[in-house]
Image 1 (cartoon, helix red, strand yellow):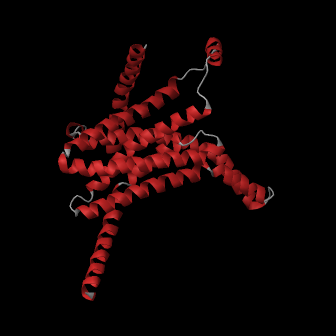
Image 2: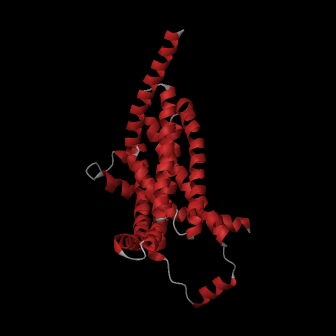
Image 3: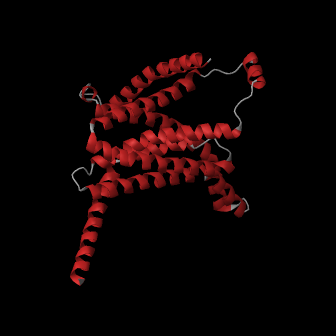
Length: 291
């Protein structure tokens, strides 16, 4: 009986060793997408009142956990029942990410300043209140997280397909947890930079090294947010282009001499430029039908 107990312990130890190795490999493989996930979600988690930043982040992180609880079992089920469905879902997600990225670029370059009558009309018409606007932005962040989570789960699963089902499940679950806690933990640190800076300035009586450090943190936050906004938009396009490149054979073998990142950016931009008018037209048609 004792020998049987120790044999079980040996099996558990061996399993944990295998999981540690596969988790390390899977995390390494998903490092690129995790970096994109961080940039995208940091950009989406900004723009709230200081008192609402952490509560909003917790809402988005909760949504991210729910996303992965939905995606992980479906990914395993599809892998067994109909593997091609995973590629189809990834491509649809890529189209959504491409649309989001290009739509942001178009909004930046072609957003015009409001003039007389437009300002009057905006004042006369009720706009979304804070809670509604916050809920809309949280929903958008969770939707984008869903697409990125699919990519993370599929990549992690792809690295352990030659392992037993138990190791696959544990490894993908570990990567999903690390992705969620790690990404949103770093995002929380970024959006609270200014508060940390103010506290350092206050405790140092606005003198000395810690005061200077506090001033740097306060002044750096708007710059970091702008940089993350740009990086996040580029990341959306690159991730979408990468999905097309890796899952559509024709595109994968197209332009072989062009650097991979440039090719993926091109694919993402083209897809986004196609999707923006389609989505805009779809919204117009929906509005007309709704009336």
